[in-house]
Image 1 (cartoon, rainbow, N blue to C red):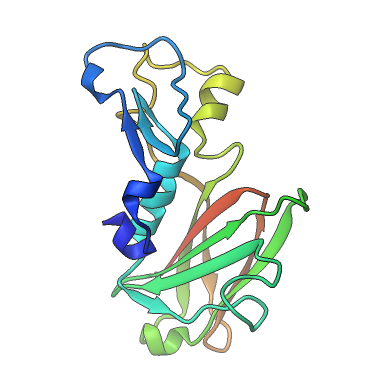
Image 2 (cartoon, rainbow, N blue to C red):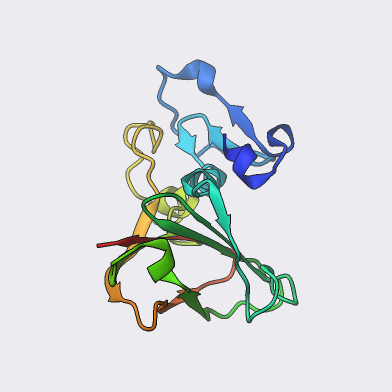
Length: 193
């Protein structure tokens, strides 16, 4: 289901390792040389990216960066937006080998009056994957958090909600800013209150 929304050939991108040992705890952080989604008892970061793709609605919306394409001129930032009957979802990513500084991105969702009749206030949730958010390697290896008796995050894996706020529209549009570190993926959900 994830690959249908992202147009990816899943056989090229995913591996699931170590699932034949479900009853045995592991005492090391599993590492894989490919794009592992689940490795032993650890749900890895790529899984969460596909989970974000799955949260996108069925109806793709026009999206642009600086009134241009949906990918920046230097290919370092991209954005996809979609809609279902109850909300709008914005999926943004940043991958820039040259610029490691945090960037502030400005988002504007236009014509909300035509999409949601009589709605003036909206609720925004922001889910983030980066070096320190929704990142099991950082959580277990760098920060040294408890590995749940070798079960890691297999049963508890969730996207990290980093911001949740209400905002009123202005002129039918909703605007807000979000800082995005390098090598990160962001999912915003916008729904009427």
